[in-house]
Length: 558
Image 1: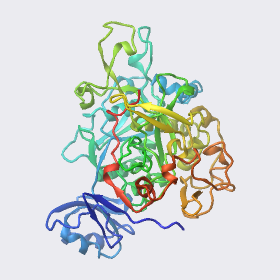
Image 2: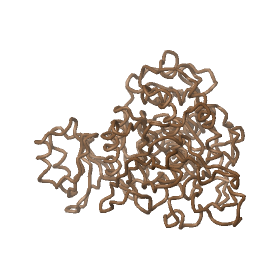
Image 3: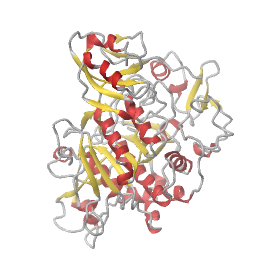
C-alpha cells in the first residue's frame, strides 16, 4: 500500500504538526483569535458528539454529507478540540474561486442533437456565482429551465449572477442559442445539452470568491434535491489549492458523497499550467476537488477558432498532474476551454465591466451596428469553461441511458476520448505574448479529447469503480507504475473498468515505463530528484506560491 505523505505548508515560515487530525494550514499561534473551521467525524456525529463541541463555539452549519460541521473556534482551543472521541479531522474554511458554435462542433455535440439527444429531462446543478435568467435558457414554450435557485452566501439571498461566471458556465451547458439564431446571424452559440434543466446553487460573490463550507452545503442540497429535479450532474468550475490527501479534504469528501448518491461530478483542473515558480513547469498543480480520484477532472484545449479538432492544441494554462500528496493521474479528459463565447449575465456583472471579455456583434452577426458590443454574449477562457462542456456531455449520455452510474459515465467518456492532440505544441499568452511549450502527456491531457459521438456509440458497462489511478515512482529504476487505488495492483491487463492501453494512449504498456517518455510527462517530473521541481511534486513540501486558484477571465492563449 502506498504511504501517503505528510504535508509541510510553507508560507513565509515553516509550520509543522505532530498530529494527523489537524490540517497543515491551521495556524499554530493566534491565542484567542477565532478561526472558522470544518470539523469532520469518523461517523455521523450524534447529539452527544455535537454537545461536546458546545464549549468551543456555536455550530454555524451541519455538513451531513461529510459527517461534519462548520464551527468558529479560537486557535488556542484547537488542541483540546482534537481530543474529542470520534473526531477525524479539522481544517479551516478555505476560500474558493471560479476556477458555442465552435465548441459544440469540436466535441461533436451537433451529431448527438441529430439523434434527439439534447439532455431533456436531466437536471444539472451549477454550483457557481449564480445564474441570471436568459432567453437562451428557456424551453420551447418559453418557460425557464432554471427550475431551482438558492444562494448559500451569508447575507445574500439573491441567487442571480453578479459576477458573470455562473451564467457563462450555464450557457456552455444549456444555451439554446435563440439570441444568435436567424438570417442576420453568422454564428449560433448553442450549449452542449440545450434541453437540460438547471439547478442554480450560488456560492460565489460578485468578485468570484466564496467559502468552501458554502460549496459543501450546496453539494448537500443537490443531493437532497436529486430525486425532485432528477439531478444527475454537478458542475464545479471552481477550486482551491490542495492542502491534504483527498481522503481528509472536506471538499473532496463532499464530492464523493454526491458521486456515491448517483450524481456525476465534473470539476475543473485549474489554470496553473504555466506556473514554473518552483521549477515544476505546471506539473502538480491540479486544484481541489479535482484531485479526487472519483470525479471527472477536466483540462482545457484551444480550438483556435475552428470547428475542426485537428488544429487544436492544449491550452498552456491548463493545470497538470499528478496530484500533490496522493499522486493521482489527472486530468481525466480535456475539452475546449479557450476563448469560449457563452451567455452574458448582464452588463452590470463584474466580468463584463472589466471590459476585456466583451464580444462585438461583428463576431457573430452580419447586422448593424457592425461594431456594437453584444448584450447577450461574452468570451472567457479557462478550465472553468472546459468543465461544463464535459458536464453537458454527461447529461447526454444519461438521457440516452438513465441507468448509467457515475462510474460508467466516466469510464465511457475516458475510453472513447480521442488521441488527436499533437504531442508537442507552443502556446502564447494573449496578454503578455510570452510563449510556453506544452506536450500531450498523460498528466496534461489525461485520456484525451472529449468525443461525444463516440461516447454515445459506446455500450460498455463498467462493473468496477472508475477511480483515476495512482502513479508510483521508483527512484532506483526511475520507472513509474500506474496502480489501482486501494488494491495497489497494476492497472493494465485485467482491469474491467479501463480495459487496455487505449484509454491513455496507443503505446503498449506492461504496467511500467521509463520516466522520460512523452507519454508520462516532462523530465522534471521523473528527472533529477535533487531539483526543486521534483521535490515539490514527489516530496513532502507544498508551497502555496506555486498554487494559483482557478480563474477564467484573465487566462487565454492566442
